[in-house]
Image 1 (cartoon, rainbow, N blue to C red):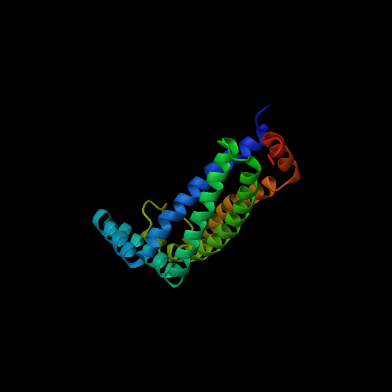
Image 2 (image 1 turned 90 degrees about the horizontal axis):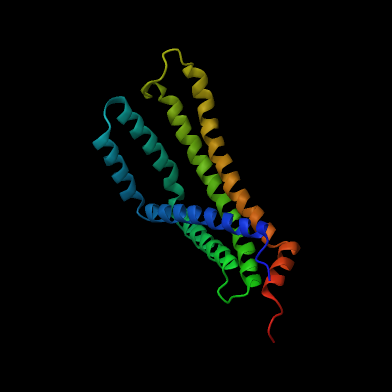
Length: 209
């Protein structure tokens, strides 16, 4: 019997890579948010110990804005990050077992993978909406602090930069969310498709009574 079709193998590997990075990032953020005030103090102290002058003031303003934007949502965001970590774990394990089942039926892993990837896409979209709101506030702070930015060209149009910076930073966050959440959504639909179901069923062979 031939192995899995190349398209399914590639999609499973993409699922492993994206779920590993997304899940690890979510886990780290969950731990950081669980100790929100401690994390804020530590990061501010690190900046004060390594930066000086205008750069330190810029860092302080940006970090204070970042944590002020996160503070109202940090407790529900811990839950969100924990859920995202769990769903990414399911995607990672199911993708791995689809590639190397070790006695498990691939169709069961396909169903788990499809559902977990869709749920991960939903959670990552919520995460991205929150991050975009935070990014816009950070962008506004940067726009108001352009005089502190090091090595800024003397002829730079700071007025125009100040107007566009919040939107650019928020837009970057939304584009990254679209990439990650969109990939999970596509994977979920792909592994729930009839074509993949039939291809995996061929690999599993007849089910034992």
